[in-house]
Amino acid sequence: MKRHLHSSGGILAVIALLLIGGCGKKTFQSSEPAPTLEITALQDSYAIDRAAYLQIDVAQQGYEGGYLLSAVLQEGGCSLSIQGSEVPTSGEWIPLAGASEILTLVPTLAGPLRISFEVKAEGGEQSGRSFVHFTVTESPELGLEIDAPATSSGLSPAEITLRLTKAGWNGTIPVKFDLTDGSGALQYGAVTVRSGDRIAIPANVEQTLYYIPDERGIHKLQFSATDGYTTQYANAEIIVTQ
Image (tube, rainbow, N blue to C red; front, side, top):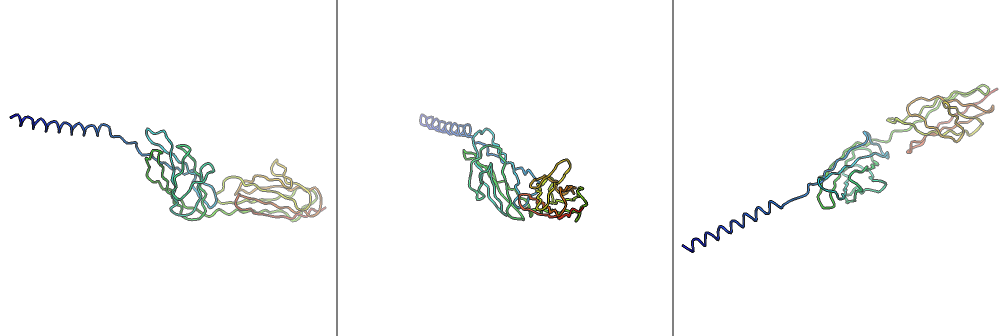
C-alpha cells in the first residue's frame, strides 16, 4: 500500500512539473512583428534619363531602431540613389537614414522596368519583397522652330513667332538668344532680351517676340533651347532696309 501511494505521488509530481514547464513556455514566448514596407510612386510617367521619384515608408510596431534596404533589378535598366548616395540594384543591404526616404530613379532603357525592394530591422526582422513595375518610354524629342520676316522696313520691330515643343512637358524651357551679326534686341512681353541672355519659354504654346534693330543691314539671329538632355537650334536672317 505504501508503494502504491509512493508511485502515484511520483507520477502526479511529474505531471505537475510538465504542466508548469509547458505553461512557462507559453507565457514567456514573444517575437517582434516584421516591418512593413510601402512604396509610393510620385509621378505617372517614366522616360529614359529623366529622374523619377519613389517614396519609401517603413513601419514596425514597437521598434525604434534603424533599418536596412535591399533593391534588386528584375528587368530593364536604371540607377537608384538616396540623398545623392548610390543604391545598389544587386540585393546588397544598405542602411536607411530614416523610416521615410525619397529614392531617385533614373531609367536607362526603354521598355518594362521591374524592381523589388525589401527592408529589415537591425534586429533581424525582415519584410517581404515589394515589387514596382513601370513602362519606360523614350525621352520626348525637343523641337524648336521660329518664323521671322526676311526683310524689315526701317527700324520698326520685326515680329517673330517661336514654337517650342516637347510632348508631355507642362513647364518652361530655357531659350538662349544670340545675335551673330547686326545690332539690336528682342522684346518678349515686358522683358528686353539682349544677345547672350536666356529666357524661360513655355513649351507647347506658340510665343510672339519682337526684334528691334539698332541699325540697317543684315541681322543674323540664333535661338537655342535645351531640356537638359538635348539642345535644339533655330536661326533667322533679317535684312533691315531703309
